[in-house]
Image 1: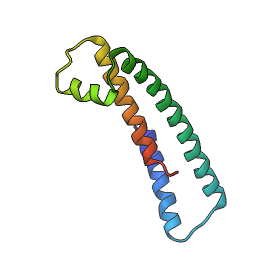
Image 2: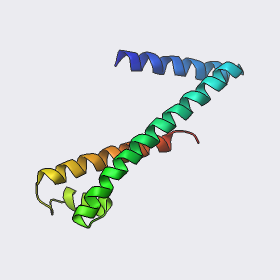
Image 3: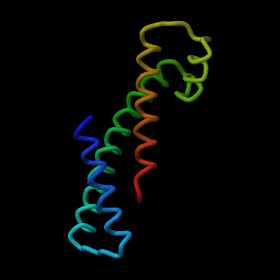
Image 4: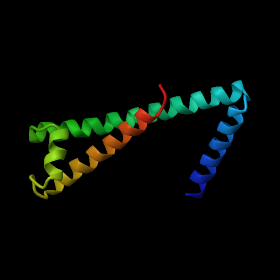
Length: 104
């Protein structure tokens, strides 16, 4: 947690510096590269999870979205496979959310 807090503090410091009119092509290029690398990593993670979801969808003849709605309402039972599907779907939603938070 301390590392994340330190990183956030540094990012906020750079933001304040940029708000004063400061410019740096080195910082700009570095941030662009970091965002690009993180986007690639998250896309790969989301794609891998989507493949796992497709297998469950084929097995159960149900979309993951519909499955999750039914599962959360308690309509599908408590089979271990369903909990695994739910976990993969939540992880996929999280990866998609983080991707959406990144600039294009």
